[in-house]
Each structure stands twice: as structure tokens, then as C-alpha cells.
Image (cartoon, rainbow, N blue to C red):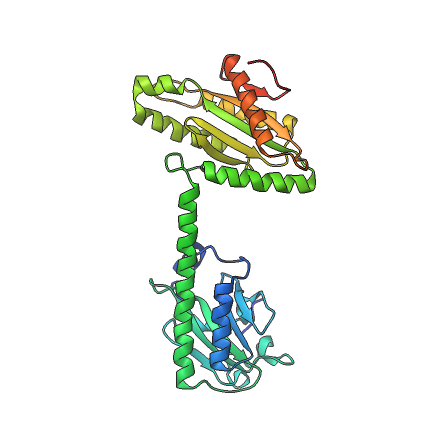
Length: 339
């Protein structure tokens, strides 16, 4: 049940939450850049604690805490949820016990509870207050003018850091996504395969891999043109992605080849997935003519001193067999065979 003194919602709450989600920061690990700003706020304001809090739909989540151990609390108890109601105002509470908004708040009334609070809203360029940079104390007090200005300046730096973090993630995504098909590219695949190989090795679990090749793609390109070929590759990526499981990872390996990592999947589990991929492509309503794929399948339990390249080579060998044996088919690796 919400606390009787829970703050009202901002008028732009839906847009504010959308803006918060775009930063993709909730529930992320601590980061030194944010902790440094909290530390400076604590030192400048001469308080025992400084926090960077973000206000989610039903909780206050703490990105940085200096001088306290806190991760989240209900939004109904959050003083920062009050601070975001006036994005352009630094909210200062000299004595929370004397403030009717907070006099009954458990964060205030508990033993050793906060008495002083000052929070500057973290406001985006569009005017959305995502949370606040705040300083708190267990005794009543006030900031001086210089401290207030410094806290405002540090709050602006928190927002700048959020923007830099968002841009860095955007650039990282751009460098790992294939521009044509919008699935992971070879670079992202190599990193994901290494990560999954190490993880499955620790757990001694099988890791599956599908190598997928668009049949007779060169002929399609030569006869219908490269723009038509590009459309086919983009559509194949979409069809294959829909046929895979939610836990699988699809990448464009190069040219007309795609590769899918199938976590915790042996050959028996990977075969139905591979057949579903093949059938989905074959049955798709292609224009101006049909498209099919050949699929090579392999699975290994990673072992010490065995490189992930072995899994890739086995799937590639199975793919070559599928192509030699007529295409539009799935072959599972069952040992090295003459090609």
C-alpha cells in the first residue's frame, strides 16, 4: 500500500519514463564516473552521504551511493520523487522532521534517519527530470549559496555523463550490427562465441552452432541485380531470426552466410531449430522467386585447451555437406567426411 505522503506524479510522467528507458541505465553496475560525481557532491556540501537516484515507475533506484549502502526503495518513500516535481528547483529540506511532507516517512523517523536533504533534479535537454543528485545528513542544516551552485553544477555533469554513456553505447551498437541486415556482425559474433564458449566450458554444457548459407545466391544476384540480392539478405535475416529461439544469437558471418549460436544445446536439440529455420525460409512468400538455405549444424561441450574455432569448423564442414548433397537441407556434423 502506498505511503500516505507519497509524492504525486509529474504531469509528463509517461514521457519522463520513456526518456529514462532510453538511457538503458537502470539496474546497471556501479561506474566510477558517477561515483566520482557523488564523492565531489559529498565533499563540497560537507555531508556524510551523496546519492545519484533515478525515479522508476514504482521505485527509486540508486546508480551511485557514497557514504551509504542502498540500491533501491519504494518510490512512495523517496524524497527524490518529490524533487523531480520541480525540475528547475534545487529542493532543500533543512529538517525533514519539521516538514509535513516527510515527518512521517520511515526514512526520516527511523533511528539514525535522515534529517537534512538537498537534491538537484537531473533534467534532460527535453526537460524530463530523471531523478536527482542529492546529499543527506542525519542532523538538520542548510547549504550556503556556494554549495547550492556547486550541487547544481554537479547535477548538470551527471546528466552529461548519462548522455556520454548513451552515445558510447550507441556507437558500440553501430560497430557490432550489420548495416544491411540489422543482425549482429562478424565482430559481434566472434566476441559472443568466445564469451559463450568460456561460459559453457565452466558449466560443462553443450554449445550449438548453425551455419546458414543462402542457396545459389550468386546466381540470384547476377540475374536479378544486387539491390534485389540485398533485399533477399535482409529478409532472410528477418525470417531466420523469427524462427530461432529467444535465447539464440544470429549474426551475419559474411556475404550470404549467417551463423546462429544456440546456448546449452546439443545436436538433438539443435536439429529441430535448424529444420525450423530451413522450412521458414522455404515457405516464405518470396518475390519474384523462391529462396532456400542450406544449414550445417554442430555442437560441442567446450574443453580445456580446445578453441572455439573447432565448433565453427565442424558447423562449416556440415554446411559444405548440405550443399554437396543437394542444398535446402540440414546436415549435422558426424565426423570429418570426404567432400
